[in-house]
Amino acid sequence: MHFKSVIVYFLLFIAITFKTNAQEIPSKEDQIAAAILAAPEEMREGVTVLGYDRNGKVVTLKEGTNDLICLADDPNKPGFNAASYHKDLEPFMARGRALKAEGKSFKEIFDMREAEVKAGTLKMPSQPTTLHILFGPEGKYDATSGKVLNARYRFVVYIPYATPESTGLPTKPREPGDPWIMDPGTHRAHIMITPKRN
Image (cartoon, rainbow, N blue to C red; front, side, top):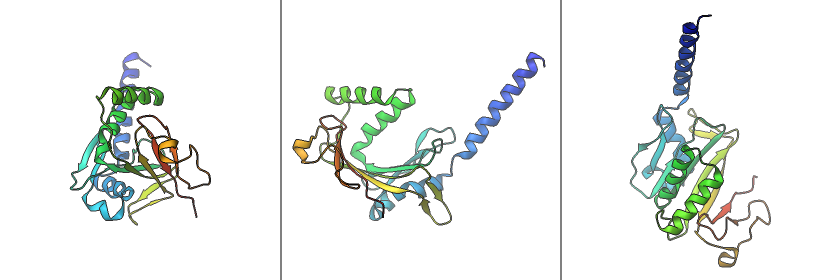
């Protein structure tokens, strides 16, 4: 095969790959419908929704009227994971997304945000702030029923620099479903609550 033919086939392969990936991005309507399920029911109508465009970039799909932001499931990752959080967490969340897009590791992102919060260049909420997560390794949004199948909820309450001493919480759950504190004493300190399966 001639070199030019190889180049042509390679370019054709790339074009088909991009087209296929683009087709895998759910519609704006489906992204919104699935993402808002992570929010408390009484707040869903007024949430802002962030989702993905055809290039996989995070964009605003819906402007809201209340204090909650929903982040749609990333179609390029297996399973399902949508989140809903108070708008005061957006600087923290947006910074994490930006650093991840740069290829930073979890530890690098943690350390950089910790330093930025301490330096005052990254603002964390001054009050306890909740993140709701609807997730499942086998989870999938079903447009017909309007539900996410094979998924469950987790609740996270961010309290920067909280500790077991300041909250009275252990650093691991005593029983499945019990609240506990993760990353205590850091900017990312948060209470974890994953309800026990029935």
